[in-house]
Amino acid sequence: MTIPEDLRYTKDHEWIKLLEDGSTALVGITDFAQSELGDIVFIELKSAGTSLKEHEVFGTVEAVKTVADLFAPVAGEIIASNPQLDNAEIVNQDPYHAGWLVKMTVANPASVGELLDAAAYRQLTGE
Image (cartoon, rainbow, N blue to C red; front, side):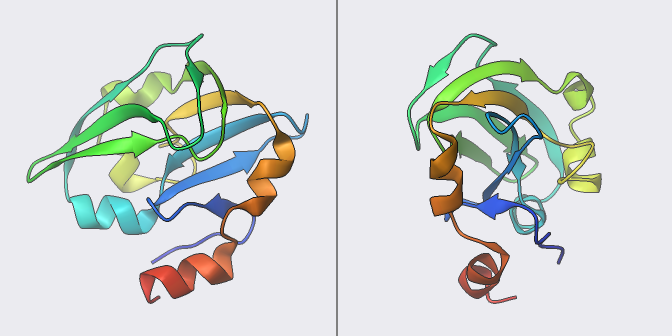
């Protein structure tokens, strides 16, 4: 199971990575989450321009065996969704790079640092 050191994590198994500008971030689901879900067949996300509160649902992931809500790791606004998600399996294949879900402007970039680091996420998942 891969848990990159440069990301922050939620207890709901989303990851977030602040980009170089310090206020824009990519958000996705973790390797642990995609493996627990199984084969992902469809992803539905709220549209660009949607403002989100921390932990607000911003979409769903449908897998062969279940449907799961996606929760915003921090407050902000969706500015784009991954155009490659028409091929939903990309999240199973590469959850941390090609399989990112949304790009968002983060309301308070310091809030990202309050999320779980890789060591704490490993402990949460038992990895």
